[in-house]
Image (cartoon, rainbow, N blue to C red; front, side, top):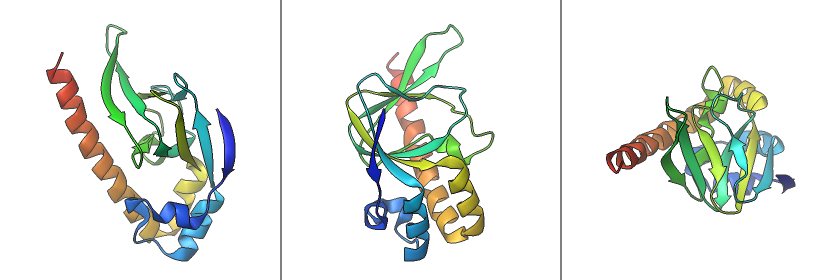
Length: 152
């Protein structure tokens, strides 16, 4: 993984979870966000690890996997551009509930988790918008998991 560059508020505005957020809040958020790249097979995070970033996929695909009791990895979903990855960054206990692995080369916006949580507590508009985005992502992810499990 390598850091590519800093992010502008205009880039963040493209994503629905930030659509109602003020320009000032977007500037603060952009200051804690970097664009990062991952190669095929790179882990964005492993299940159980402390989550250090909330990611938004800009380009590429990410496999979401769950470790079963047998130790086998079960595919849960495939995420694409615009999807949020590692929502656990803002939900206690801030540990990954799934593993996230680059299925293709991936470019993602990486928002530093601790600073993001602090900003969300201070800026309720941002916090509410982001949590709505996370709730939507989780609903889609649950539907994807059902499809994957039904196919087994």
